[in-house]
Structure formats: C-alpha cells, structure tokens
Length: 363
Image 1: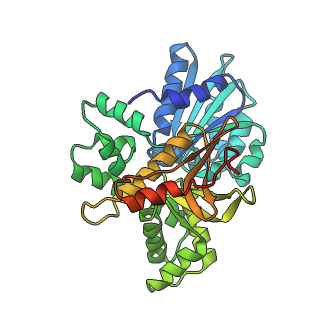
Image 2 (image 1 turned 120 degrees about the vertical axis):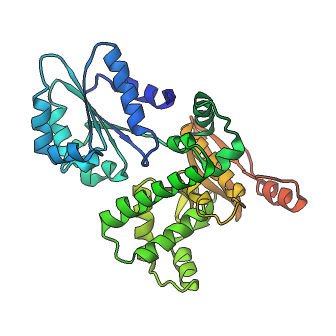
Image 3 (image 1 turned 120 degrees about the horizontal axis):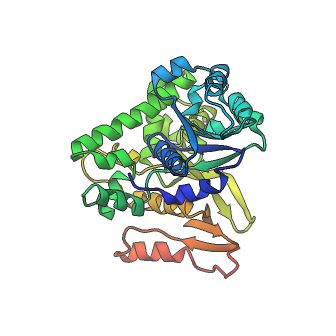
C-alpha cells in the first residue's frame, strides 16, 4: 500500500493530543491502512501501541461494550504513554463513553468508523470539544496511479473514469474479478450496513431507489423529483421516505449532496442539490453492457478532487444556467465547468454560455 501522506500529515499534529482522533469514511477506502501507518510511525519512534480491530468477530465477542473495552485497555496501562488504535469502533456499544474515559488516562486514542453517525450529535455529545475528525476517501487519480505502479500495473485515466479508486479493486487480477469485488462491496454496504441496521422492510423499493440514485450521479435532484420518477416506474414511495433513504446513503458515505448556490440570494438553496457517488464504480457496476457514463463520471471525479484539495463546493446557477462547481478556498472563488467533450458546436455553446454576464465578484 502507498503512504497516504495527504491524510497522515493532517493527523500528525494530534499524535500527542488528548483529543480523540476520529477517522471516518466509506468501507474499504483505506482508513485502517492509514491508522496502521500512523501506528507504524509511532512505533518507529519507540512508542507503546495497542491495536484492536472490531470488524473481527472474536474481538467483538471479547469486547462488546464500553465497560469491556475500558477493562481490556486498563491491563495495558503503565507509566509509559499508551497509543490506542480502535478500528471500526462503531461495533462497540457506547464506544463514545469508553473514549471519553480512555482519553483521561495517559493515552492517545485513535478510532476509525464507516458511518457518519460517529460524528452526529447523538454520539459526539459525550465527546463535545474532545475530538478531532478526519474524512478519508477512496483514491483520487494521482493516488490510484501511484498504487498501480507499485503493483506493477498500468492504470490510465480511462480506467479510473470507469472503475474509480477503491484500493482493493485495483488489486484484482482481471475485470471479472474486479466487478465481483465491487458488487460484493456494494452489497455489503447496502444490505448489511443499511438494510439490516435500519430494519428496512420494503427492501425492493429501497434497492430500486439506491440503484436509480447511484446510476444518476452528478444530476440535480429534489426528493420530490425522485419520488415522482419512482411513481412513473410503478413504485409508490413518499417524499419523506426518499429523504430518509438519501440520509441512510449519506450516513454510509455512499453519496454526497452538493447544494445549489444562488448568486441572487447569495445563499445556498438546500431544497435542490446534486448527488454524487463516493466512487464512480457505484455507477459503472450498474451499467448494462460497456457504454459507461463517462460524462457524469468525469464530473463526479472533478468534485472528488476539489473536495480532496479542501475546497468548499456548491453548484452555481447563473440566472438558470448551471455551472457545475463554485469552489471556494482561502477567500478565493473559482467557477468550474466540466465536459467530457465539447467537439460539437451545440455542446460547446451550452457549456460556455453558462458563464455569460458573470462579473469578477461571482455574485
């Protein structure tokens, strides 16, 4: 695995802090590897470390809750500072209460989790002001290319446009194995992480909505428009249910929503938003045949790159003409339009006419 310095350098200033370091992100994006790379740095400098993986059933059975975790860690405490690494901590009941206690000892606590509820008020109220969070994502292209080279393989931008950047996907020996891995990963997230966790009864309806959203990435939606589309397909689903399902997908980091920015109101309009897949492979594995949606996948990838680089991103509406991204960082604003091809005059005119009349203030 490559060293993901982009994330490690964000965590490094907190190695000695008593704040709980929470590393979050979608399943199999590399959180555990980053945690182990942090641990390796500390061990190399002679620090005492303890690592527990709560994705492993024997570990979960031995340490099911906060009391068991505190008791287990106590047996490792000494005068020497202990660096504690707790992988997939959401599998521990009342994990936040355990972390609140452990951070009071002579320790530095690091945790990972695959659910954004780790950062919800429900869970972090026990840690209010006592944690710092880091969001990890699948590989951006430069990371994917670096990892492919380490594996002795070629991985071009055309490959990334289709298959995205899940690290283990790049390790598969052929396309058939790659598709099988990605389908199994998607099934694990949707069935195990969402349907089971939330007790979804109408699984067929949920799965159809999920498929529709993931194959329609980089489009402007409202919950009502999704509900109306599903009804046109013979599936009756209410707007509140659609909103709930979208929230489930966001909680598992499967999708992100980007609001529409109105320069007239100088505000974000939260009732319309664009939905983007965390990784474009979620679109591609739902495509029949080999005519992959490179146009929308490219826009999705640009969004992921902007977020990776630390920009605050929204969709920009110039009097009804859409510009894909309004990206803001360090008090500088950029408008970004994405097109896979502008070879046709009509496409060229549509993409560039969206900038007409915009002044340097950007609204």
